Length: 108
Image (cartoon, rainbow, N blue to C red; front, side, top):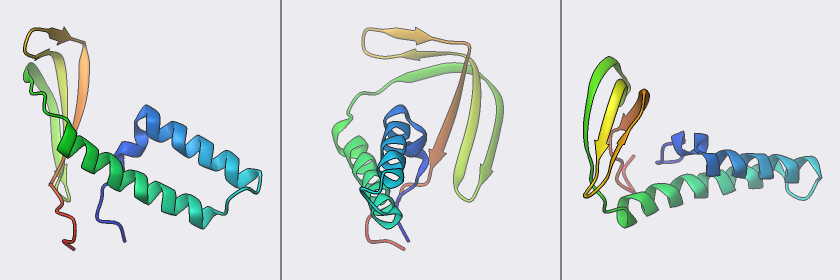
């Protein structure tokens, strides 16, 4: 079993990868087992890239609408959030934040 979360699969790049893998399976170019191995590698690669390469920080001010925790996964729904970066600010109507307990490679 993979030690990485699968939630990055719902990003635009993750969905594009899944669509491409589905087409390759349907056309007979790859088998489903290879597609699952590719997705597991994607989960690992995206998590490692985000943790090692993204250095930007932001502050957030918002109204907390709802929150919940299940199996070390927290979900927050923020209304009218403002994200402040070094020189920019971004505001929107609603944001859903999913926060997971950090997993260390090699840990079960």
